[in-house]
Length: 148
Image (cartoon, helix red, strand yellow):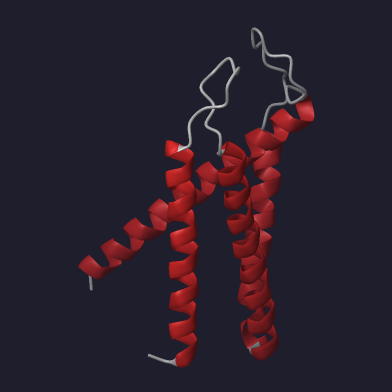
């Protein structure tokens, strides 16, 4: 095992440990008093941790992709095609999303507006498309192994 992979495994174990601690705190920390619905005390903490993990993952992915393109310019076209496909999926998802305000009884919040609803719908459609691509890729890989 190389020195870098040892360091990375320690970092991953540390991230996993922090996540486990935050999850235990979330489920055992009690509820916020005076709320209409059951709201765990550490909801903001675990949501902020999830946001941090998503942003850090995206940042590291982009950084390594840029480094990979710089070190291997021949493979740049494949990376650019992948990025173009993701952009097309994002635009198609946004086009399919509906921004019609929902009739939610008792909700007085500021998020029931067309822009937020369109963005949420775009994320959902994008997730569905990417999930479909993953399932097709897994099935295609397994079927190609069967016929070899």
